[in-house]
Image (cartoon, rainbow, N blue to C red):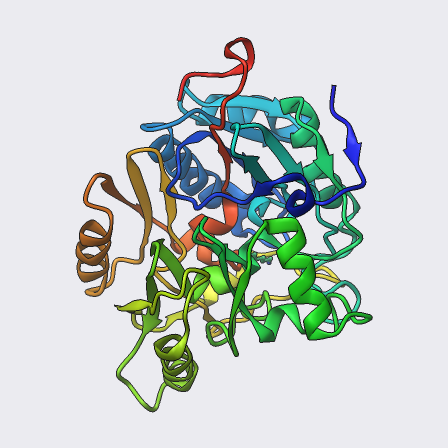
Length: 374
Ligand code: KQY
């Protein structure tokens, strides 16, 4: 039984754990829409299946597929991956799915944010988004967890927590009038405190150049440990990304986390610009109301969009000379985990990357009867 709560996680003693804390599992949505994914989503489906198999090395993975795609997903996904039927508008569960919170006793609850496809009718990426908006509630109900349902638009990729009271976010996204136009910055900060159980909001101005989410922080800068972050970087001052990363570095170098610690910043060099080819663009159906794909468009490629799973870190690979240094850096940041690169161009062509298509569920202390093996 899953109850809708009218209190807040903060008031109830809950907090969002860091992604490196133990998981009960990972949730994904199966891609299929041909106006976002080229070739009827078939290349993306192979990429999603590779991500699911990599994460499944360390924790149970559930992939939600539409009724029309259920059999196909079941066939393409590793047998260790659970497939369940669920309707959605697309496959970005980081953003339309729930954020799980835990308390000191290990109880788990879900926060079911409002979702408007990254801006609704003011620059949003597709219409409608009604089924995506139900995904958070459906996942939390399937897990039998209680849920909070704030009247607040937020995507999971727009925040990143250290589990010890700090959250990273960009003003480009959270203060964008296409998200919560009625709220001031201090009111948005209070929502983050209330629903993530944090104390300190570390604001960056912008995310990655041309990121169609309005600058999600999970593509730009992530915690890798308390007091430690990775930041996407380039030394090329002619690249529009340079000013964005340099401004973020300046901000991070004076920031303190909730426990007063300064942040150690690791620069992760971005790959060379990833441009959509004519053949790739031609494979995407043009539909009014969905962001079009044009040949030569640059996608917001970043290694920072990795998933931290039990025992593994699943990292986007772009067949680029910077792949190996990014993997080496992450291996240093996560000494106890296997670094698993997965070819990610097909995910990037849809507008996001590995972190955007995954959503972790913390282990907590669930009753043994409903606790799957983690
Ligand atoms: O990167 C994400 N978190 C989502 C991107 C959505 C792209 C839709 N075309």
